[in-house]
View 1 (cartoon, helix red, strand yellow):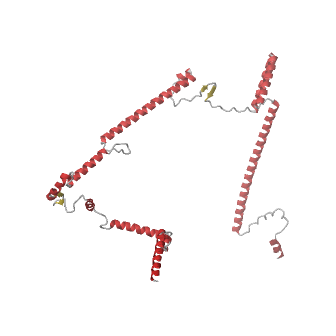
View 2 (cartoon, rainbow, N blue to C red; view 1 turned 180 degrees about the horizontal axis):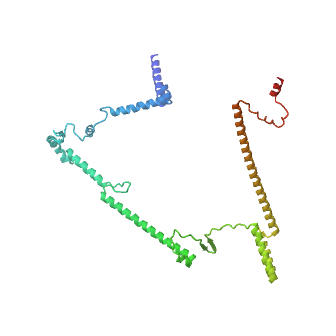
View 3 (cartoon, rainbow, N blue to C red; view 1 turned 60 degrees about the horizontal axis):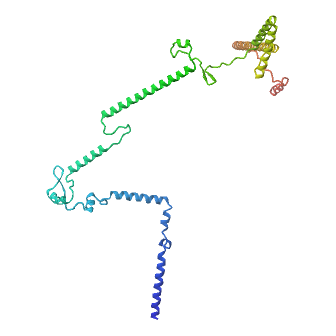
Length: 371
């Protein structure tokens, strides 16, 4: 019975070990419950902010804590560069650090084996100054105005003067090239359009000289600078005068040379026909021209009559208004005089009723009559 129990215990232990070995393969987070506060903390902004603030506060506090950060001496001791038992520097009455004899004697043995190091503060200062001067000498940085640092004032001024001179020389060269180009263009234009003798002889100032129109020939095309004025169309009277003149001319030539007169007539007919074909309006009919002139004169006379009537009507209206005003003023004055005398002024004429209501009486007047 006892052996049976021992076997069972051994089997149980073996099973437990096997189960634990399998369970250890699974990470703990998958079968051990996590605190719900930690889960919800990820999704709450307020808690995140508080956590950040706490971290920041701890970081700042750690910077201020005494004994947290190592001093230079402690770092040197940890590296083994300085012996903590040795006091290399001693401060005298003036406050200047000097090396003591005992320390120097102790350090002389080390100096034989190791390279010599700075012993006093003065030597260190001298080294520092020398290093700073070396860096200044090496510095070749150029500022915005392209002046090298370390230059003297005289050198800067000389550079500026040189730059100014160079600019002036460049400007002079540019002006010379412009003049040469301008002269060349003028010479070319003179070759194309030769000047007249009168223009060459007249020497006037450039401001007073009027710019004359020039014809420039480019290949077979001739371009002009003249402003072409629009030709005004001839009036009906001018056209009639022209027809009469041509008729008189033809009549005069007919007496001496009838053939030439016939030729003139045919030429005139052909000329009018060609211009009409081009779309130009030709006033060659004497009858139509006379008719249009007559029509224009009639329109003028009609407009003159209308204008005269308008002036008359305006004058009559002005007179009527003035008379009415004067009569109104007179009636008011008379009424005032009668009131002062204690008499009643005469009643004004009743107003005309509306059109269509002449014979009808108002309701108020009907009631008054009944009373």
